[in-house]
Amino acid sequence: MADHPVKTVTLSTMMRLEHKAVDIWPLLCPVREYDWIDVWKCEMLHSVSGVNELGCVFRTNFPADGEEVWVTSRFEPVERLEFVLVSKRCAVRYAITLLPDNGATRMVWTHHITPLDGKDIGVAVAEEAFRTEMASLEAKLRHYLDTGRTLTGQEEKGS
Image 1 (cartoon, rainbow, N blue to C red):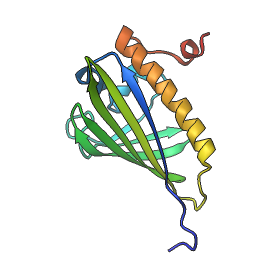
Image 2 (image 1 turned 45 degrees about the vertical axis):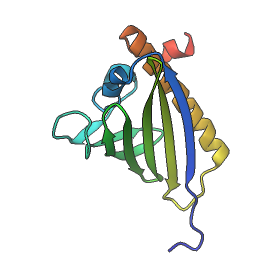
Image 3 (image 1 turned 60 degrees about the vertical axis):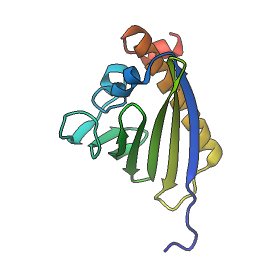
């Protein structure tokens, strides 16, 4: 056991989309994310159905994050989805809850981040990165649901 255990940081945000959960749910899948996230790339390692499901395993490898292995650890269609993500730097329990809201959907996104490199996560830095990532995902998801088109990084920046 480490002399000084690192602390898990929990970050959470809420999105409200003017779409029903049944329309949003299928997009929360490593295969379908190609439809709405312009920079998305993954390698599917295990899926019986070919799309997200309980026990689905896939790998991502983005320059800023390095290799990450994701496992779908909770799969309650149209209500709750959880992944466990492990990289060299950290382990993350990533939860998404979908809640009906008068014909729209509130989505609560929560990350429980535990560093694996022995270093505490700077909470302010983690919060800023989380807010930026979530704002981008919300814009991309909203745009795709509204238009059926992928929002590119240049469009997102207003270029």
